[in-house]
Length: 366
Ligand code: MRU
Image (cartoon, rainbow, N blue to C red; front, side):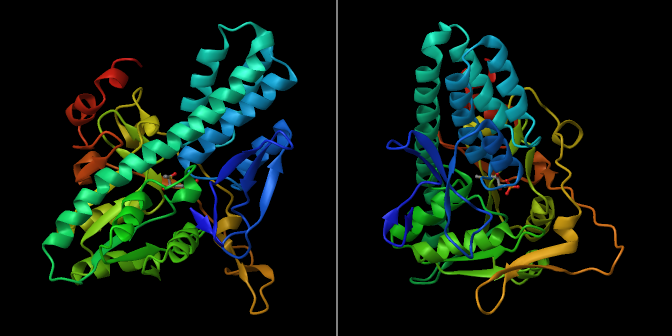
């Protein structure tokens, strides 16, 4: 996507320095900062500290981490060590394990001396595939938006609501939930997006930054406003991303997604999930009981980051001294609340049958 006239991906390979470059998302939306990731420690910290974030992006980053590990020491033992340390960085998004398993499966049979080059090629392939998957999710999701637009008087915007940032920053490019929005906007369909702030880390500010840079009209709202807007007929469709979707279609996504799904259900608002196939965990059936939910630092709830009027970055405390904060970072929306899954192959029901019919090759392989 374009930033100040230049097309950026959220990560890219710097061929001059032979190193991975990332956009440091901790500095956004205040400052656009890029960084080189040069050591295994920097790979792990980038994911843990959410300099890179979003399920598809942490998967792609982990693949580049494995490439570095193979350059440093291509032994089986080091491959196992890199798998374990990278996989331990964040527990909920399944793309991390998916990418690391894919790396291990293709690198293990190789002669160690061939592994470094093969691992880097594979990381590039995973990144490029992510871009194409998300582009296709956009093509499929666009049809839903076109359908809503066709039922409205000319010029009246399709009103979407999204939670967190499932945008190009959370993937390698396009985003998942935002891809249909970008493609609809580019096709000339009038849109308006309600952007949930997504406390505690305010990923909605990243979504606003993205949509604003692309010229998509949007409004940043508090997390609790969505239900009210739906009751008043202000939302035509909800589109969110996912960090892990089970084989029966339960959707784990950023904390607060479940409440949006409940409100959508109560108000008859379609609730769609943009789902790239690497985000399906075919080993898990029932999401609430089986998906590990990341428990993050309470400091993220008791403190908030922003900029002062002069543009300098600041962190302020919002609670009284001694207040305990609780910070589960994701929740699970049961499949019965999900209208449909927008995948790279098409739109399917959030049911075991729907997913198995869309991905017969993948559902049988795990
Ligand atoms: O904690 P984050 O910011 O990594 O969480 C991101 C989300 O929950 C996204 O909605 C999800 O990863 C889908 S990204 C296309």
